[in-house]
Length: 224
Image (cartoon, rainbow, N blue to C red; front, side):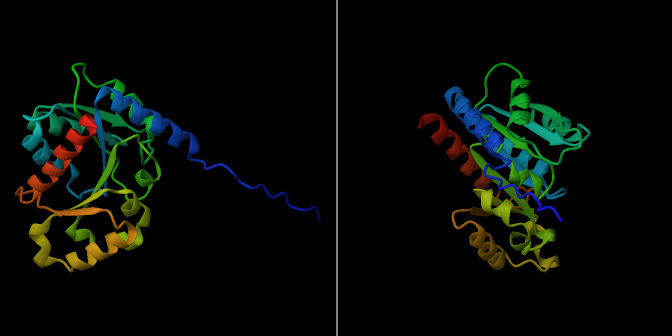
């Protein structure tokens, strides 16, 4: 029997995207634009959280939103109607994530006039979006109480790449077996530097803390 050829893979399949993402980040720095990549599973409350956050910040900084979905434009319309900020929809053509080039295409189609902050609401998924650097300055994710406090153990990469984890739907905490202390412990196993911010997007409770974190990030990015 002939020997089977073994090929040693020396280059990461994500290497080209990582280079492109780094270049995009540098370009955005030169333009003074802060890009936040927001990830979560479907139904965690990303859009509602964004609406509450944007309405707290829109009189302080210029904001635009890119909504990424496999199909539909309902989220982009909702953002535009309820906040008044520029919002565009990105259709991924069946792909469950955005990469740096797809993000670049979206940024090039934002209305002229300049922005300080662009928020990318990535495709709802706890796996694929975490694998691709979009060129964002920071990664954030939303974990909702009904999903369970064990998600950092089951989806390690997502929690490893996120700088801030927003715990949403705290108003239903009494009705679910969700332990905030254990969740915090599990997140910090994956990423000791990650910041956790408990909120309730429906009532607005705690959203101001997330807005303040984001405003501080944008100002530091533009001034340093």
